[in-house]
Image (cartoon, rainbow, N blue to C red; front, top):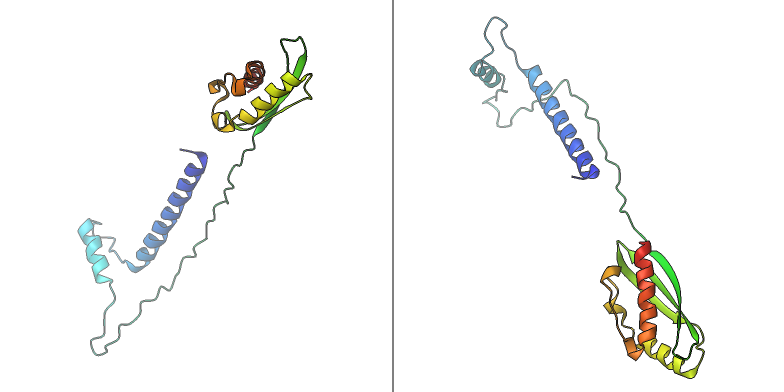
Length: 183
């Protein structure tokens, strides 16, 4: 049970207790019990029955019963509970890798994580060092399906050869693993 639920239950119990107290105090003023007689349940019931208002049979309208000693009731208000809105935490990863020609390529992966799961992911890359690397980076970027990643825990993301670009995919997975180690 959360603290908010406990607080609400406490308020309900207080209001119920106040209502019962008002009811008992109102009925006590209408009772008259002889101190010499024993306060048994039947005596109290008899006294309650004897204190009920009488109806004048000569008139067709009932006479109203007025409480001459009203007990004030204080309103109890509860605080307004605001929902907790979490914002995702962003992790920026810059990963470089070497191509078979010995050139270094740089990719940038930004991962947004909310409650331990990926809520968004972006991928970009620096200007490729040569035409072949550019083709692989472009094919990876256009073939990357975010739906395979968003909503999953980082440790459950597994990709291989996206768009035929195995080295770019490996670098991308390195960015995922780096972020998983920070979360």
